[in-house]
Length: 98
Image (tube, rainbow, N blue to C red; front, side, top):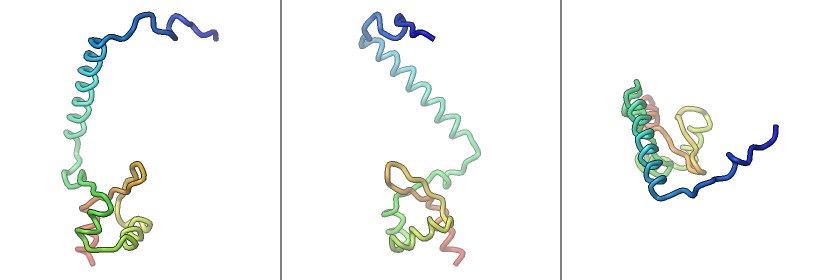
C-alpha cells in the first residue's frame, strides 16, 4: 500500500491557538476519565500507595522484610519507573493479623 504523502506531512503549521484548544480538550478528557474512575467501587484505602521508604518507616521494618513480603505475594505492589509502591492497607492489615 503506497504512502499518501498528503497526510504524512503537515500542510499548515501548528499555531499557539491550536495548542491551546488541544490542551483544553485533553484536560477535559482527563477530567472525565478521573471522574469515571472515582465513581467506581474502589475504596479510598485501596487508593493509598506509598513508596518503600515510607512503608518501612511507618511499619518499622527493614528493606529485606518488605522485599520478602513482596516476593511472597503478601502485599500488593506496583513498580513505576524503578520504584516500588505498596498498598498501605495491605501492609497494616498483614501486621494486625500476626
